[in-house]
Image: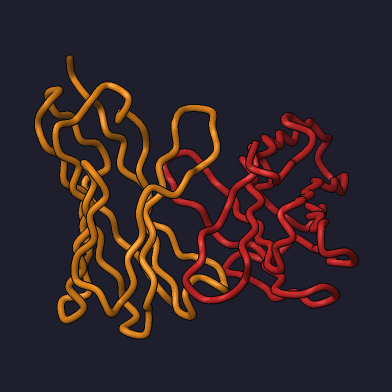
Length: 113
Length: 113
């Protein structure tokens, strides 16, 4: 089955700086790669996703890149703000997520004031 | 808020007892999912259902059972065969077609003593 590795497990950045979280996946058949943000005690919420026919996607301060050849994808957050502090999970799936998602172990992002 | 409701939020059970976690959605979604979250771990797929009266095992189905008698409901039973049942359980739903967002419930924290 699919295996997703996520790094780093903890990331501390100064407010206003950029943050990058990286994930690799094992199954070349995976075609859907969402990123979820989970604040303490709350449900995970989708922040951005990318499909295998696209190399990059942006939404305001958030961007995701996908390298299918190397089987890795990354989340980029620019101009970080205190409200960006949370745990971020990457995931991968075949069939666009219809059969469920395989998640990485998460990155705890800490924004230092 | 999100249209997917899990109850109760906290649940305590004695070892050896079966317990059922509730998940209800009013989003008219075809697909529903159960994930387990442990500290420092990503979410792991237990079971999923893409249509009423049909469900499939995920990556860690042993010791769990589900039913899907109604489109809106997907209850999860944690049986006494589950060796480490104490965890945070998250239910999710999606339209079910490829490349669609999964919406999560607030979760149920199960503690077995």
